[in-house]
Image 1 (tube, rainbow, N blue to C red):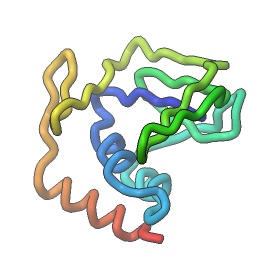
Image 2 (cartoon, helix red, strand yellow):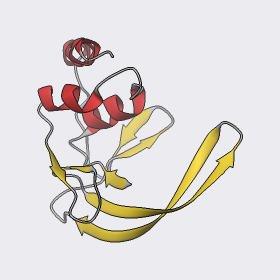
Image 3 (cartoon, rainbow, N blue to C red):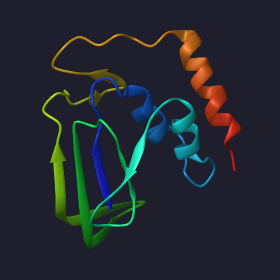
Length: 121
C-alpha cells in the first residue's frame, strides 16, 4: 500500500481523495485533469503522489477490523521525504499547516466538483 502525506499546496488532492468513493469515481483521472501528477512506486505496485511532503511504500502486514472500519498495518519498504514541502494537516473540517494557506475560491471548488463528476463510474 502507498502512504502519501499531502503537501500544504495539495489540499484539493486531499479533498478529492478523501471526499469521493473510489468505487463510484475514477479519482486518479479526475486528479490528473486537475493537474496532479503520479508516479509508479519502486518497491510495490501502486501509484504515488508527486511532490507530496512524504511518500511511503509499504507491504501489508496486518488488517484489523474495528466495527465498520479496517485498520491497515504495513511495513515501510521505501520512504521519501521532500524537505522543500510542508505537510498538510486536516482537523475538524479545516486544513491547516505550520504556515499560512490560501482558501480555495467557490468557483474553483465548483470546477473541482464538475471534473470529479465527469469520472463517476
